[in-house]
Image 1 (tube, rainbow, N blue to C red):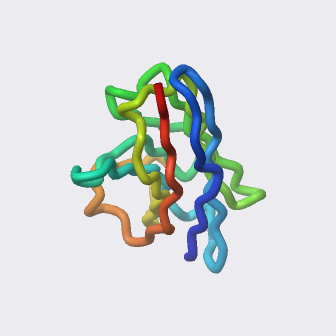
Image 2 (image 1 turned 90 degrees about the vertical axis):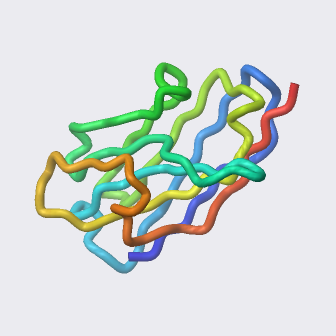
Length: 126
């Protein structure tokens, strides 16, 4: 499966952005999806994940209550709605996927993910 992320940009503190990741070349509803981010000088870190069915969600503690992950299996995309953005949210955001049989499987480990899209840059300024 190929993944294409979009929607990044520059926003002020407290603002919102919506990232989108479009999938092609695979059976989208067979994949657990996730967003990761990498800030300058830091390792890539988990942000949010969503199961095949969309029924299981997990978030990293720094984004809980501010970010929402969702997916549309018909449109083959996964979105990340980011609200109340902070300067520490500045990073390159990438979407990722792994195929799995279970409808409930999710993972916060980057090693679980086989497929990665290119990143989209989010910059939050004060």
